[in-house]
Length: 135
Image (cartoon, rainbow, N blue to C red; front, side):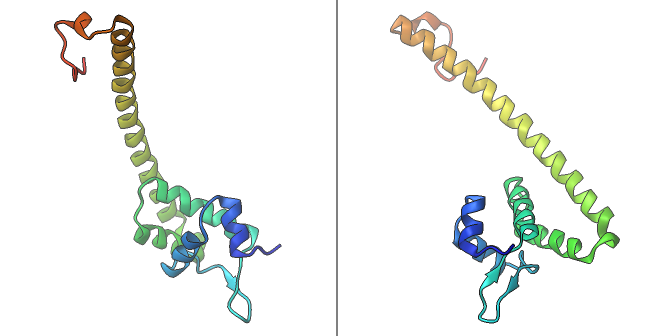
């Protein structure tokens, strides 16, 4: 089954502009076109775009995503490179999660702090703590 660009955009909850940008940047060399230039997306193309989106969310630069796509098109000879790339992404995401968890701890603390202060009507209940205390 083939999909039009508008259908893929809707299916993936992204804009047509984003898909055109991916194509312009060389991230969609696998997408076929009709004789009049209309992109024809297959289900496998949609799945590949999901991987592209995943890599973008991890902060991977377009240049590296393009390299991954090229390796994928080369096939089994690049399995090790692709595996190593995902190991690097895994480590990067793990570090991001750890940072976000530390941030969440601060936010949780400040929510409790302000909840108690709001109930008391003052921050004076924390007479020895400052407004921006992260302890």
